[in-house]
Every structure is written in structure tokens, then in C-alpha cells.
Image (cartoon, rainbow, N blue to C red; front, side, top):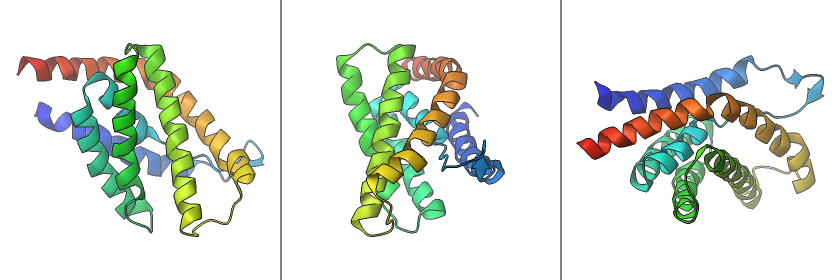
Length: 172
């Protein structure tokens, strides 16, 4: 039963992103901005930091493919970026000590890299016509702000959960 808790958690994050977007009004606080939740990605980064590279990359690939199939008309963007950023996070975490503050900051940098990577891929294949300054103002900053709030709320519970999971994996 405990083997299914981690995939279930990521599935809940995956569904929560969709529900959040559906229930968030288009003009939030009177501004027309795009707030893109990355709850699943935050979970993947914390999994990579506190459990390990292998689990982060595997879950990143599986849920990246699922994300592409459900939300994106071009397959492969998130399937590539989720595991790639998890790999980069694991490399960064070899240099710095894994604690709550560094996990918070590395997650934030990972989200920034994800957002810019998706924008650049969309620009490259001509899905978006938005210039970079408009992207920053309409999507990038609001998305980072939303996810910083989410991180602030769930940073410690995610850290505790994944540390317990890593301990259980080492005991097996």
C-alpha cells in the first residue's frame, strides 16, 4: 500500500493544477495575468532533492509525458524538461547542502528554468507570438509569485514526507 502513496501524491498534484486553473478567475485582483501552477513540478524537485536523482528523473519522465498528453498539443516539451531539470537539480544539490532554504531556492530556480524553457520551445516552433518582455510581465512573474506562495505553504510538509520516504527506501 505504501508503494502507491508517492504516485498518488503526484497524481493529486497533477489534478490540483488543473482544478486551480479552472477555479482561478481570469482577471485575478483586477489584472489580466496568467498564473500557471507548477505543484507537480515542485513535488518532483523536492523528490529529487530529498530522495534521489533516479526517482526524480523517473517520476519526471512519467509525469512529463502525462502532462504533455493531457495539456499540451506538442508531445515532448515537458517529457524532456521535467527529467532534465530534475537532473540539473541533482547536480546542483551535490554542491550545496540540502536544507529547507536551499530546496526552496533551487525549486524557484527550477521553475524559472521550466517556464523560460517552455516559452523558448513554444517560440521556436511558432506556437506563441508573445515577445519576451510580455511573457515576463504576463506569465513569468505571476507564475513565480503563485508558486512561491505554494512553496511557502507546503515546503516543510514536502521535505518531511520525502525525507521519511528516503529513509524507508534506505531501510529496504
